[in-house]
Length: 376
Image 1 (cartoon, rainbow, N blue to C red):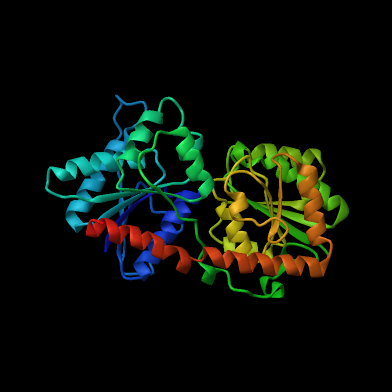
Image 2 (cartoon, rainbow, N blue to C red):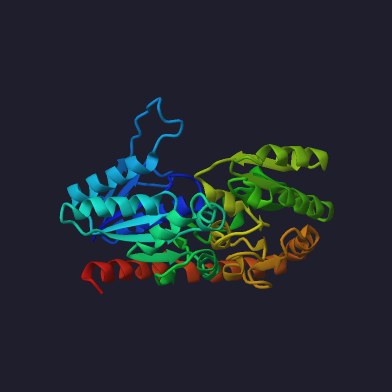
C-alpha cells in the first residue's frame, strides 16, 4: 500500500509516533511518504520504502503569519498525484486534518479519491482545537475524515465531550519498538559516568511546557534526595526550562540535576534510569512513560488523562492526584529505597510495555487502511 504521513517533525509525542509508524510500515513493505516542513527528527532511512517531501513556504511581506496549511495541502495534492497514494494519514488535527480535507477536494477534481485517516493526539483537541477560533474547523475536519483514531480512551471521551462528532472514533494506543530497548544490565549502561554507585537516577523527559508541571518534578526530586542519594536527569527544552533551573538553585539541588537538552539517544538515557517522573497536568497517553517502562523504569505520574491506561498503579509505578508532590515523592522513595522492590517494579514495567509493542499495534492501522482502500 502507498501511504502519505503528515506530522510535526519535532521531538513531541505526535511526531515521534507518526515517524515510528511510518518506519514500521516501510519495514512491512508498504511505500511511505512523509510530507512536512522538515525531516522528522527520528526518521531513519533504513528502508527503501521511505520517502520525505519537504513543504516549502515562500516568505511574502503581506503575511504576518505564512499560510502553512495552504502550502501543505498543495504539497499533499502533488505527492498523492505523483506517487498514486492510497492513504493520507494525518497526525494532529491542526492544521493537518483541515489541510487534508482541502487536498482531498482538489484531488477529486482530478478523479482521485484518496482516503484520509486523522489521528488525534491530545492538545490538538483539549487545548487548541477546542478554542473558539478553531473549534468549528477542527470539528468539520474530523467529521469529514474517512477514519478517525485517538491514542487513548480518555482522549476519545474528551473529543466526544468537546465536539459534535458524527464519525466513529477508534482507539489505537501509542506503541513502542521494544527492539530499541534491549534488556541489558545496568553495568553495561556505564551508570558511573552519571552517578555514584550508591545513588539512584531519576529522569524526566518532556517539552517543558506548563502542562508538564516541571516545578513538581524538581520538588519531587528535592524530597527524594533528602532521603536517598540521587541524581535527576532532565531531557528536553521548552518555555519552562529556565524556571526549572531557578527552582533547582533555590532548593539547593542544582548540582544534582543534569540538564541534557533535546536528545536522540533516549534509549541510552533511559537505560541509566531507576525511576521516571511524569507529574503532568494531563497527558492524552503518556508516550514518554511508555518508553521509560520499555527500558525497565517504573513510573511516578499523575492520574490524569490517559496515564492510568499506561501506568498501572502499584504494579508499574504509582499514580497520584495532579499536584500532590508529597504523595509522588513518598511513592518514589518506596520504590527505590529497596533494591529487590525496585527490581520487581522494573520487571513489571518492562513486561507491561509489551502490551504496547509495535507488533501488537501496527495491525490495527493496517486494517483501517485496508478497509478504506477496499471500500468497506
